[in-house]
Image (cartoon, rainbow, N blue to C red; front, side, top):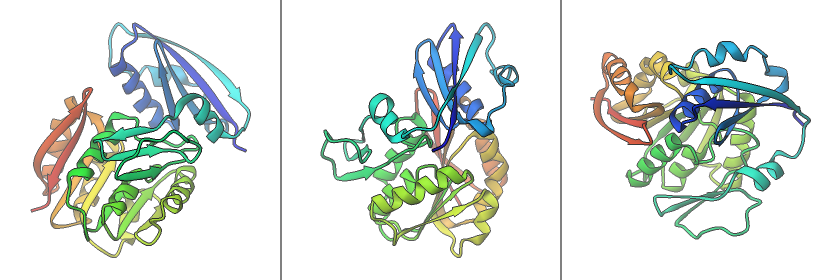
Length: 283
């Protein structure tokens, strides 16, 4: 079983936006999972990937007047599904149509789309605002017979819902090997193996996909998205849609400028708790 480091960061003063930005900074540094419990953000990273240079990471916070103290604890490998069941991961309903839960849950709301996600410390249970923003878009879109690419697929939750709604083929790309292996398990749990395939890699892996997509989704972070937008644009067919999230509404102008430089046309923005989802189209 995998050993982890648990890093508990106490923010003063505490606010959800500051905690979310800190989580994004830590995710870029390799942290996999986050639990917010005011005034703390607790983050988990595999022990062999942990660096104790937390001061440098906290210094990246773009907020004045916020102080942070932290404590790191070694957590010996255990049954992480059991830990999530007992402490963190609870079933969630999105758009009154989709319920997301783990295989260990028993009291589950009934919805049209029932998605089983066993997270195993990987990001993407549907609880984060950015994941929900794209899930809501997928629930409203006509996906029957449409091809899709999901970059930064995480637990594959977006790819799974798209396949359930009739999308095929669907390809998920994930750079983290642990998340990639977890995504494979989740695709199998939801019986969408015939529609969904998965690739271990970054945006360069888009070149391996033998089709241009009707829809491309990327829920990562602003810096990765803006760096890879050119590759995204090349992977979408004319008239295809690109849905981007993982950044704040304040960053929409930056993402839009980078997208338009790659030949994509801005359509709209939805937001939740200052997190944003941008829709683009390839003319």
